[in-house]
Image (cartoon, rainbow, N blue to C red; front, side, top):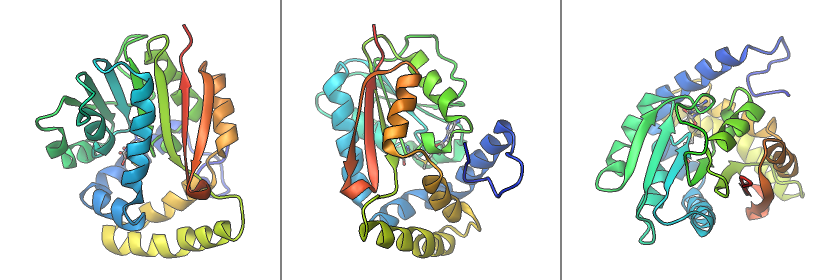
Length: 246
Ligand SMILES: C[S@@+](CC[C@H](N)C(=O)[O-])C[C@H]1O[C@@H](n2cnc3c(N)ncnc32)[C@H](O)[C@@H]1O
C-alpha cells in the first residue's frame, strides 16, 4: 500500500515512518489546535461531536474507553464532558508534545493521558469498553496491524469508531476540495505552523489512504463485525464503526 511518505523510491521501513510521524506531530503541537479549527472552519468540532455520539450509543456510560491517537485530546475531553458518561477515557498518543499541549482539557474530567504507541499498546486483551480514533489511523505505519491492535484491546461487544478524512468522489466538490486541499491548505499550514512539510503531508496522506468502503473491509479483516460508515459533508470525512464480536 502506498503512503504519504512514498516518493516513488523504496518504501521506508515502518519504524522509520512512525518516527517521522511522531517527530512531525511533536513539532506542530503548539499550532495544531489553531490550524485544525482554522483549516476546517471549525467543522471538525461538529464531526467530533457526531463521532462521540456514535461511540456513546454503543458503549456503557461507566466504561473505560480508549481515545487512540488522541493528540491534544479534543475527542477524549468531548467524551469525558458528556453528562451521560461516568467512566474513564485513556487518551493515548506517542507524540508527548501533543498530549502536553492538550493537558488543560484533561483537567477536572476523567481523562488519563498516556504516551504510548497505538501499534503496541501496553494493555491486556479485552481491556476497553469502546475506542475512538480521530484523524489517527491514516498515520499508522501499518494500518492493518493498527486495526488488529485496536480490536485486540476491545472487550467483546465493544464498539470501535473511526473518524477520518477522505476525498469526495463527486465532481465538482471533488475538484474544489482537491484545489483547496493540495494548494491552499498547505500554504496556510506552512505559514501558521512554520513547519516545512507537515501540511503537505496531510493532503498526501489523505489521498493515499483507502477510501471508506476499503477501510470498512480492512476493519472486517481485523475481526470487527457490523462495520458501517457514513460520509460527512459529501465525503470530506467519514465515520466508521464496528463491533468486536463476542
Ligand atoms: C492528526 S492528529 C489527530 C489528533 C486527535 N485525535 C484529533 O482528533 O485532533 C494524529 C495523531 O495521531 C498520533 N499518532 C499517529 N500514529 C500513532 C501511533 N502509532 N501511536 C500513537 N499515536 C500516533 C500522532 O502523534 C498525532 O497526535
